[in-house]
Length: 276
Image (cartoon, rainbow, N blue to C red):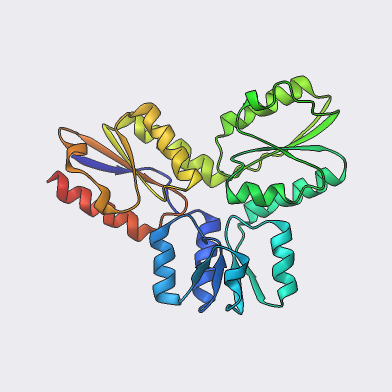
């Protein structure tokens, strides 16, 4: 069986930057998971004593606090600043940008529309920068029947599908007099999604490697499954099942933006052993 890697996959700029920051900031705590990959977070804890706190109260014992790649809510950042702790900001610059846009546009009186998952930490952070009440939507249907006012500003969670974002933008342009559209989807997301789409069309089975709570990884799985029904999401090599590869001629492999190369290589080695 031939094993092929997608043309673009794995660590994005923001994640690479955050990992480097964490490795240089030994004996620190991240507020929330630094990235959505348990294996890499465990590696940082074991090798660099970088721990994860899930609430502000858990940070009492830490002198150094790392802000996760997805960012945090504005009022939480203010509390940390007031605490006097050393703050190391590992927020991805592509996440900082929609935060700034939302604050500026809402200050100018625009109704802010955020395309994304309201429960995702990135969206919670972006939403908190609006001075008026923003609207978070996942689909055009979420806008139907909603009074939006004379002018709106649209941003997106960085890991959403561009085609779905454009559907939201088209609807707003048809129904609102003034629309400001800011494409805040990360380029790495485009490239990884396009590569997964291409490879899954040519493969008998697809393996998507990444955190199961990672938005961009789940997007890759959805794309792969639309072309190759036998597509599977795993976090570690141990999850691979021999039955997935029986009678298959080509296995495609891709990985989410928070998946380190060492996990990808371990998965490929395990697939090779299974397929012999």
